[in-house]
Image 1: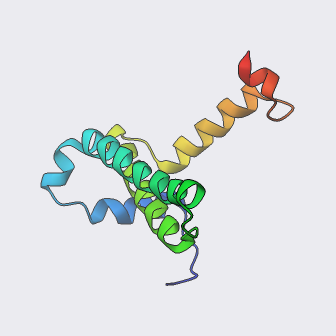
Image 2 (image 1 turned 90 degrees about the horizontal axis):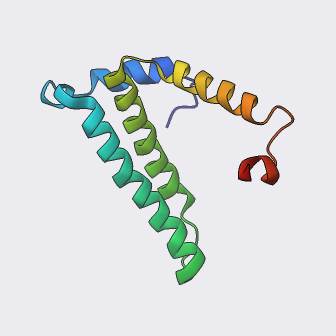
Length: 109
């Protein structure tokens, strides 16, 4: 595994190049459904650790998080937006919602 850094947009471009022509027909649907499946796999790893006595398999969780990122990139491509635009939009939204940082009270209200 390389320690080379890559930007979100470089990742998205390279991931897009790996999608088959058939896979590009409905990237939003495939991306969202794939995301649901991969998040379920992440949840299962943590559930087994927390409630079934399994050791936390960080390598497996990292692997599944990479799959989550893949499907987020695919969904963004299907929407015609970049991962960096999505990340910036999310930070702007959170800064507007929590200008002094997260608080339970602001989250409830």
